[in-house]
Image 1 (tube, helix red, strand yellow):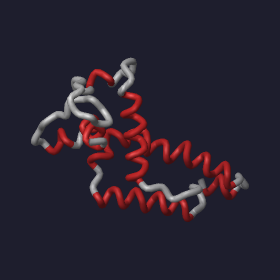
Image 2: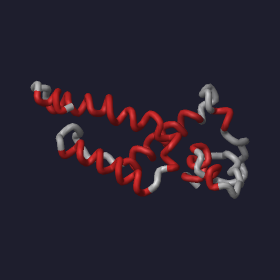
Image 3: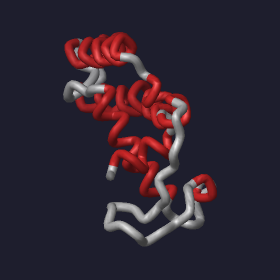
Length: 126
């Protein structure tokens, strides 16, 4: 990124390249591992994103929590479409309570199961 900037690439295009390369790599797998981020790891990623803003690679300061929430909302809306390949992992549909979704909420005592992406999305809107 520094080399592109030093070679005279405009700020607008540097932001585009940063979004296309760096942020897209973070967003690619964030639904899978975002629930398991500790405060320390989240802080390290935020520090990296702030440093990129300070070097003028990004047009705004991104936060990993905001990126995670945005990615989860996008993917959970896509999964609810019956043609999506992950639609089969959603629980059964019921219409007993008035919620943002009509899926059965799973019950488990395992923290690992509770932190999975599907459960996170189901309980987030409750």
